[in-house]
Image (cartoon, rainbow, N blue to C red; front, side):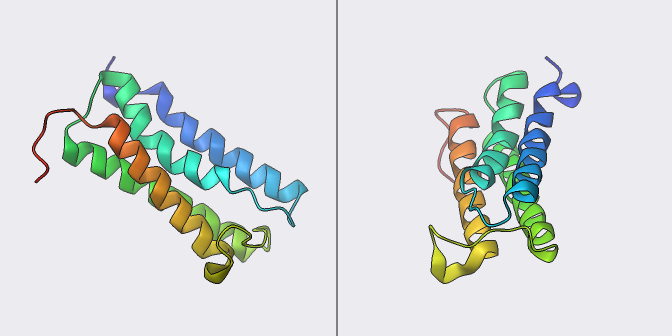
Length: 120
């Protein structure tokens, strides 16, 4: 499958829309799985479209997923829709979402990268 015409990439947007919708109906809830899924799904979508990724491509896709998560968290916080931080209360709700997004991006990179590449 051609990576430029990747239908799987929309999975991240679907998770983002679900997070916004869930926060609209339950603004007091803490949906900790959505930041992980949004960031995780970007590199994994590219792997599904064309096989294992070179490390720089996987890292770039992971960074894009983490940025998606951060932007959505900031927008939700701006409109008062981001719940409280129950998992990482010291960071606040935006910090918690960003940290979870970074974790999801890291997991996505690990899953999508080609095996056998040197670490540096």
